[in-house]
Amino acid sequence: MLSFAIAPKFGLLLQLEDAGSLSFKEVQRRKSSQMRGSLVNFVGSISFYGIITTAALCGVVGPAAASVVNLVTNGSFEGTTGVAPSGWSVGGSVFDGYGPVAIAYGQTGLYPVGAQGESVPVDDASSASPDAAGANGVYFVSDEAKNLSLSQYVYLTPGSYKIGFDSYDTLNGASQPHDAVLTAQIAGVQLTSFKLSSVSPGSWSSHTGKAKIETAGDYLVSFAFNTPDTPTDPVPSNAGGEYNAKDVVIDRAFVIAASGGGGTIVSSVPLPASAPMFGAALLALGAVGYGLRRKVETTARST
Image (cartoon, rainbow, N blue to C red; front, side):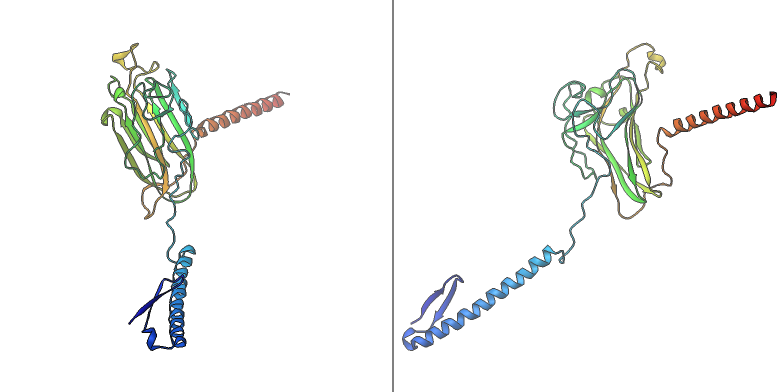
């Protein structure tokens, strides 16, 4: 006859010989021996898995993947709607007061919080940006824009970088009679410049490229919007008429480090937009100084 006993806490099933054929001490000895063996195996298992766990926590098993960082500040244009997004500067000329603003997705408000009644969907383009599309995009809607821009500078060290952004040509903008042009310069590279009439309205498009930086410095990230028909430069066939032009929404601008090298070579740091004005001011000051010096010299000779 066989009997069974369960070792407390270890769930150990002990198979014992017929209790009647063994002395009480022999039964206890065998039970004790089996429990010691099971305990050794149990502790060994704990030690083995403990080593694996400790190794994983210490990074011995394998390094964690490094997170990708977008070097563009607020590349998803989040923040307060109805104004230019934080981290960006507005430049150029706008003659009708409709500057670039952050608008909210999925609602039918009018400018400056919406796309003139059109519900723009969340950016769903396939993008290399590490940022989510978020709740906002930037809306360029002016009918009278001359180099109207949204820009910032990013500091880059030598190396290769993936660059890009997404765009959405609105349906109500596509119905307007006059075209508009969007030009994107990222990390010193003119990534794209296209007429809004050349893209399909109502869907998101992704624009990507690669830049190879050879000199450390601050590089321009800029989106410039132009309409061909402004009060100062009217289309001849529309002189004095309406300036209704197409419009566009942009999102997820990015500059991220790229492996493998390559890309459009940018060999020197572009000058900031204010540099020519500063240089002109220096030349003007130099001319004034030269004139004053000549005047002093002429006065001295005449005396």
